[in-house]
Image (cartoon, rainbow, N blue to C red; front, side, top):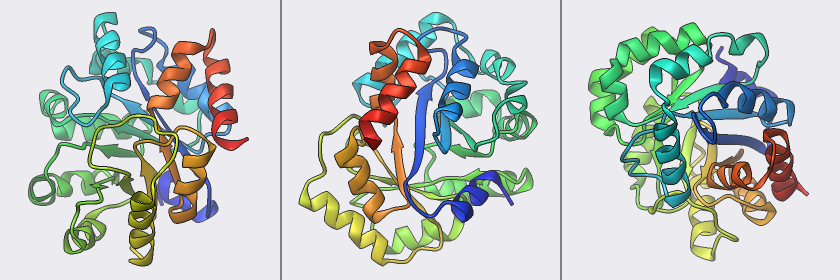
Length: 257
């Protein structure tokens, strides 16, 4: 049983997953951020692998990726930074990156390295469904990793069923078809979408991402899914607070109090 499945088996509601960009705000911050998030009560962490053209990301995360790349982050350096991470952190960890970076490193090499480091799953938002299913799923299965696929309000029900069939860990329920970025609230249309997916009774649990940034959006996500994923709001918090611990504390207060 993977750590991700253990989390969903153990905790039924209000799961909080947080994304951060490795190499941001400073080159060697990743282990510090992971430890601070885990100590702060976050349930799961998505470790972003920066890419020069992150199509799914809004301006806040794009900017953090640009800064991280200027700082000198690379996959090789990130993996070196994380070599001892499982000595201090027990919660699920996920690599989130783009297919270009993955292919540059080698897909099977990435899976092998992920297992070596204690990473539990992968999110590659621009890897097409059919290509993953036909070419890469067998490799993911070989290494016992979870592979998280995304759905949007425009994803047809038949495709959602297909995605549910080959996903593992959870399904990433994107709140809109646009890029990432904080929102103050979710409108009736998005709430209806969340509820529609909930009524499908999918095999995999769902988490809502894109736009979760405060208590209103967090509560709305948790009402129709098992929890929420926060990215841009945490990147902003890292920029606005003098220490990583204060950035984590500020985020937790913003979404839970």
